[in-house]
Structure formats: structure tokens, C-alpha cells
Amino acid sequence: MADDPATGQLILFGGATGSSSSANDTWEWSGGEWTELSPAVSPPARAGASMAYDPSTQQLLLFGGATAPATNVNNTWEWTGTTWLHLKPTTAPPAAFDSTMAFDSATDQLVLFEDLCTRNVTWEWTGSNWVNLHPATSPGDRCGASMAYDNATSQLLLFGGQSGTTYHNDTWEWTGTTWSRLKPAASPADLGYTSLAYNPSAGQLVLFGGYNGAVATNKTWTWTGSTWTKDKVSASPSIRFFAPMAFDPSSGRLLLFGGYDGTNDLGDTWSFG
Image 1 (cartoon, one colour):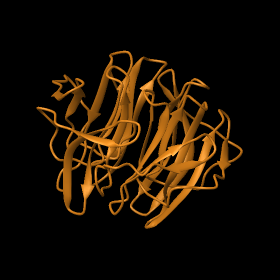
Image 2 (spheres, rainbow, N blue to C red; image 1 turned 30 degrees about the horizontal axis):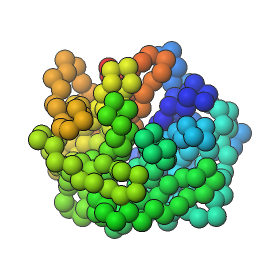
Image 3 (spheres, rainbow, N blue to C red; image 1 turned 90 degrees about the horizontal axis):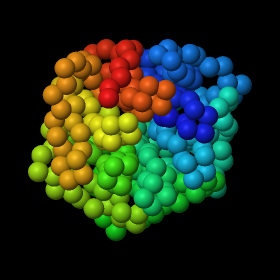
């Protein structure tokens, strides 16, 4: 799920619909309602794709995911406002499930951190092609990391993830050429598959939920620029992970949809802000 300022749409694509099935439907959130769109062309059904908007090229991009259990893909798609275009860059990251992608306004880069548990490659989208950046320092092999840009602090941050049976709570900042590990005084617990997004109305980078290998959580954290602060919210979604979260320009709030609680796929919608 991602906000497309070029078209004024908040778009949700695909996702898991069970332990061995996925979808390729496209939905728009507007005025407090979901509307299923009918694009002439759509990517094949998939879960675990990455989606982000690149303001420098005015492209809403979707990358990768899994079209079936253990079948990862590396194709790149663009949303035009009415349909999907299959892009064909000459260079592309390897097939991957649950990578994380965000635009860094400070460096004018759309950054993809490919985190298929056994690699930690950082890529940049040029508008027509993918470039492997080869940073000198990286967060390390992991999957399920979350990444978002904090406009208030001009930081592109990556949090947590999973390496084998180990979960992390480390926080990393992208400098434009490499990754730098930060040392916040307080942090969420070791978690993967959290929801992370920036709310410009509140000037806050918000982290929600996640999974530690045994149980999921429904705690809410915000980033101050140097540390994490646990929010005392009066109401909250139930425990979950794998839930997409993005800014909804129509309400000026963050929107969170669905996810997985460890037993069931979820289909509820929440706003925060």
C-alpha cells in the first residue's frame, strides 16, 4: 500500500489470502471507503511485494513478491492511475519476497533494501533501471525489515527484521552512499514485519506491531530523531504483523489495513493520527 500524490490515490495491491494463495486485486481508499478498481492490466497475484512513490519520476512502483509459496519474482510495475505497466529495466534485483522500499527526499533516491534473509543488497531506482549501490556498511542479512523516510528529521530509517531464528531491534540510517547504525536510548523489542510510515500532518514517523518469532504485538512507537518513544494510545488494532501502513491524504491520517495475527489473516482498516 502506498500514497500516489501524482494521482491523489491511496493504492493497495494484492497480498496473501491464505497460507497458499494470494491476490492481484487493486483497491483505492477514499472518503472512508475501499473501492476495487478494474485496471486493464495487472501484475500476477502475489504477496510480500514492495510499493513506494518516487516523486522525482512521479512513478508509483511495485517490485517483487511471491506469486506462490517459495516462488519469488523480480518484476517491476508502475501504476498510472488507471492501470499497471510492466516495466522492463535492463538490470533488476534478484527475485525477492518482503523487501522494503522508500524514497529518501534528502538524497533524492528511491531506495530498495532487498532482505531475503540471506542477502542485504541496497538498490536505487533511476526512473528506468535498478542500480546496485554496494554500500560499505549494511544492516546485515535479514528479512522482514521496515523502512520509511522521516520528513521531520530528514532521515531514511530501517528498523529490525529477522535473520534465521534471530529477530532484531536495531535502527539504521541511509546516508546516500552507505548505512549508519544509530544508538537510540530506547527501542521497540526485537521485531520483524512491523508497519512503519510517516504522518506529515503530525510530523511523526510511526511504527506499529510486529512479530518476535513467538508472538505478535500491537504497540505503537514514534521516532524523535534520536530515539524511539512508546505511545500510550487510547485505542489500538489487535496484535498483528505484515500489515501495510501509509499516509492517507484525504483524512490527513495514517491508514493501516489487515495483516496476520499468527493464526488468521485480517481484513480490518484502522486510521491513526
